[in-house]
Length: 332
Image (cartoon, rainbow, N blue to C red; front, side):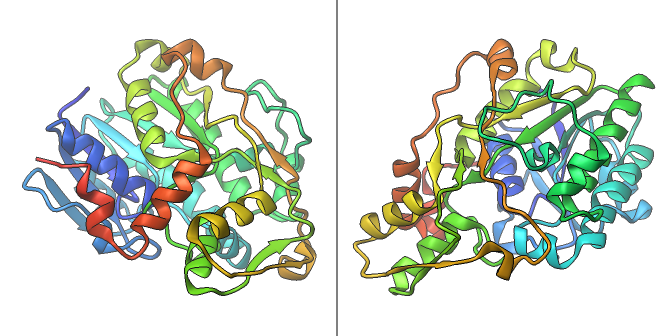
């Protein structure tokens, strides 16, 4: 592992957890974030961390933040289905232009970890999805409702990553699957924190259609550990930007998740169903999203994933109590 790291989007959910993981190793961390969806409250307090408020699309900000960096972790982007649906063009531009700016303004010697998304797989069926699945512009846009949006932006990020690798940059491209856990905001439609907050308040939990859609939920701490493990593996970098799925292949239905949250919260909340098309007109919901993690296993072995019930319990326990969230994750 290197000693000086830049994390774009480091004030967000995953970025702040990754920053803490890096700081716990005694590494120096710099965060670049415009705080459009991230929060300054997420940024760890440490003498080994510095924060620059700025956009990943602003060359001057990127140049300043990336100066001297040996490793750049790129997470900056719009988060959440509601925001991505409302700001399709902006979502695409942040991913595409932000990645291009980062590649242009970061030191040529810096290794790059670029975060894509499982959204690039489009509207897939029920089988576990492998990185070898053919992806086209049309299949990507099917996720965005036939327009260029969030998924298309992540697909452009991946293409830029491969181009950078071909030109000699060291690039690692990761495709996360539904990362959740303590500290995730419900503000932009993230399902687990939305359910948790509403269950604790006794409010109804909204489930789209019948709730038979399944997702594979990955605890953010497991995710960070696995990401850091990949960064330490020369075999991962030898893939030269070819993507790696990261996620827990265990499936959970959305209705099953809602019922679990209500039970674990001891809540009297009810579940109400609403057609997906009424909330996201023009879009089609992904029925199943399951990662094939054979490539990941070949690189780092089989991670021990936290089960969804334990994730739900910890998320409930930490809701509204940031000191609990961070207490077991000391930093230097």
